[in-house]
Structure formats: structure tokens, C-alpha cells
Image (cartoon, one colour):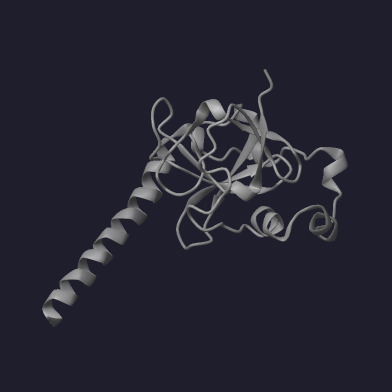
Length: 176
């Protein structure tokens, strides 16, 4: 019995090390995911750049504030937009910037709304994130809102999966 537990623990450790290696090497090879210094230096819209944390707390729900400004993550399969199939645009919950289109949304099976590309390359900012002890790429709005992360396990044509929090987004349905 102890031998079986030891083998299972060893397999878990090997798997975790493999995932850490995969995350640290493969992301480097995709130019689109690389964080550009120019993108990080983009200025926020003037009217939003001077909003204080207290003002954001007044404007947003507690969940939205936690997701957008404290880099929170909602529980998998809990978001309102996960199963949304309507046509339209996803804007950020705070700054109301358009960031993703329903045309690029797909079911990744991960429990969060997933997209294979943003609405435009300059709609988002990508930033290296080491909060969990290994490198991930954080997805931010141009005004600095945390939306989620991008991973290299998405579908064609990009191979990317922008994994986002539903609470960080607002869906604007296309009008016919």
C-alpha cells in the first residue's frame, strides 16, 4: 500500500514538473504571446486613468472589483458568460473597452469563457505573471483591468486560449 502511494506521489510530481517546463518554454516561442514593452506602456484613457480604488469600488460590484483590480479568479463553471452563444462583443466590466468578439469564442472545456484571439491586437495588454511561482501571461485591458490569462493550448488558427473571467466582462449583443 505504501509503495503504491509513493508511486502515485512520484507520478504527480513528474507531471507537475512537466507542466511547469511546458509553460516556461512553449510560451516563449509564440511571438503573439510575448509581452511587448510598448503594450505595457500604453496609456489609459484620460477620464479613467485617475479613478481611485475607492471610486472603482463604488462603480463595480464586489466580485467585479476583486476580479479586475485584485487579480481574482472566479470558480470554474460558475460564470454567467461561459455558455453564452449569442453574437456580439465582450467589453471590460469597468472601462467598457471592447476586447473580444463572439466570433472568436469557443468551448475549451476549462470552465471559463475562452477565445482564440482578441477583437484586435491592440485591444489588450499582455504581461508576465509569476504569482503562482511560474510564468504565465496575464491578459489586461488597456486601462489595467485583470481579465484572465492566455495559454498555448488553443485551437487553430492561433493555437492560443485566452481564458477569461466572466465577471470581468460585459456582453453587448449584436443588434440586427
